[in-house]
Image (cartoon, rainbow, N blue to C red; front, side, top):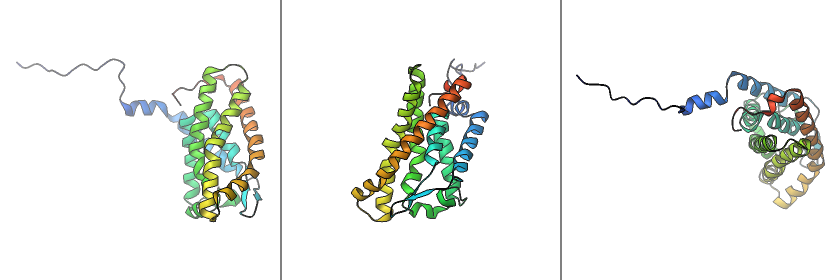
Length: 211
């Protein structure tokens, strides 16, 4: 009589699909949808065109920063990517109530495409801050939000303006400088709101996955 030679399951081993499912459960997906809608709602605030190219100052970056700070990198990037996908599909949830693939030809396209990547960076930095520091969290959360702006949003925004508006990078850099004061204020506001959320709901500051 032959006996089965099937090896016993290894304790503590979880299939990759199960790990991913554990990472983004129903509650996480609901948060992703809510924060994607939150970024879209901020578009209702009138945009302020700046410079000859007319790339507006909006509250979208405030929404991206706040989403990443509260949700972390994976969920934050998912929420911003969902917002971006819905807008590119034609729903007018971008600045000036625009939408559709034509937005990729606008001078502001680089800023839009930077949102999910910026959320990854900001969310990862915020998670590190929340795990390492219990004091001066407002400062560290603000620096996390600025990290996403400095490392991702402004460089890609400058590149997008240069490519789509046909101007030199140096000129695009000068145009981009007009958005820095607003970003400082918006990232500070985002950090302040996030800190208040974490104080009211301490579990939100304890990421349940490595993101």
